[in-house]
Image (cartoon, rainbow, N blue to C red; front, side, top):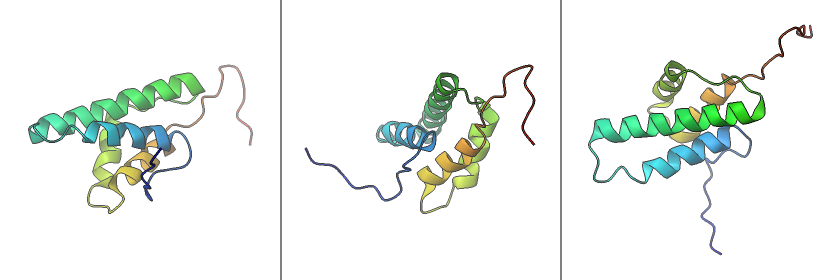
Length: 103
């Protein structure tokens, strides 16, 4: 099996799943209008991040946080990774109701 080396691919979750989702959706850019592929990539990242958060006890990001993270990453040589890292920082672990945060 041939593996393509991607120096920007995050090695930890949730950044890795966010990055992989973006990369998978970006393959469909050709043949789509700019507005369509941008919307599809943001939606794919949003749904993947929310699912990962739900499955792993993390706070799901809002759509505005996904959009803000993407805007922050624009122009970076590591655009996809930067987007994934910035968004994953917003997905802090949930604190169960009734428990106190450790100081």
